[in-house]
Amino acid sequence: MTRGELPADYFAATPCAHASIDLTYISLLLLKADKKAAVDAAAWMFNVVTSVGIIIVNKALMATYGFSFATTLTGLHFATTTLMTVILRWLGYIQPSHLPLPELLKFVLFANFSIVGMNVSLMWNSVGFYQIAKLSMIPVSCLLEVVLDKIRYSRDTKLSIGVVLLGVGVCTVTDVSVNTRGFIAAIIAVWSTSLQQYYVHFLQRKYSLSSFNLLGHTAPAQAGSLLLIGPFLDYWLTTKRIDQYNYNLASTIFIILSCTIAVGTNLSQFICIGRFTAVSFQVLGHMKTILVLVMGFFFFGKEGLNMQVVLGMIIAVIGMIWYGNASSKPGGKERRTHTLPTSRQPKHGGGLTDSTEHEGKV
Image 1 (spheres, rainbow, N blue to C red):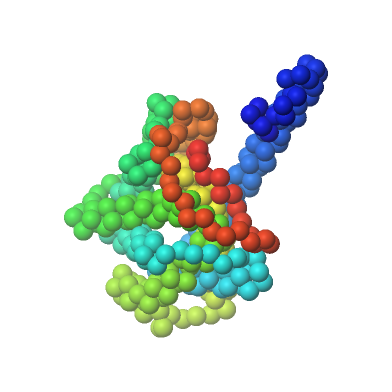
Image 2 (cartoon, rainbow, N blue to C red; image 1 turned 135 degrees about the horizontal axis):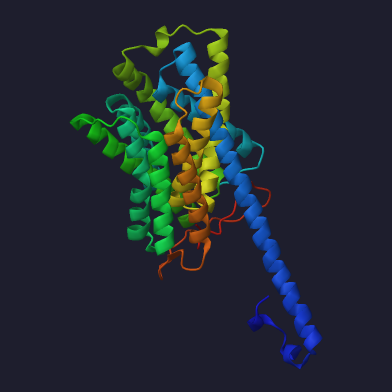
């Protein structure tokens, strides 16, 4: 209830009545804010747990069992995600929605170039340059938001992003060497990934789609296209054929486990970008980089753990805390007199939804 919606006799009421109404209104606002914060934290933790889990499983699958077919494996991930959305739609938890075919094709194009570009960039570049390319996704995502969404960042928000980049760079960037084809692959990977993540937020806002609905539209197209080109691309990258891989019980279990965790990873990515923005997802996403390093030291040995890595982790965490505080303040990150037209979907009861309150997100 706002003051403009108060009854006509409000101003004739006693001061105690005024205080009672104001306290009730403030309590409702605080309750709503607390609920949103709790849901945001749960969504973020869901993404962190599934992302770190799938990295560890995939590392074991590829390093221990020699399953090096990354693109085909990603296609299997989306096939499993498609199966999940089909089951949920059949059970009535996902309601019908509409996404224009041109928008779907653009999204799949960005997403598939992102996957292929990342795989090729990792193969053609040193680990150090690959990490630098990943770090550059944050300024690219910022540029997309400034140009396309008219977002304005405060000085503290910009500085906090710089501190995050510095910290992650210190603890992850080692040898840096680059060649022409590797540089081109990195550019394609960075821009396609940034566009794909921006588009997740854009489509959810414009067409009022929940994360489940958007996955229901995009996962089948990605699964079909990646399973079609994946075996050929993996053969080009590794000179190994997936049909000649020596499948056994252990490797099959790890493949199934990877696909199962990928359902949560794909869903949580859409939820997080929908609730926040692509830039915030990238900035906070580097927390996963830190966690992966820590888990790697814990599970696979501590040879790489040194003062440089520890210092970088500390700087990155400080930057992430600063970013969260700076971007949430008034003027920290806001849209400048620009509203995105939305195509409202008909509301149905009983469906799985997540928050569609996207204005003012950080």
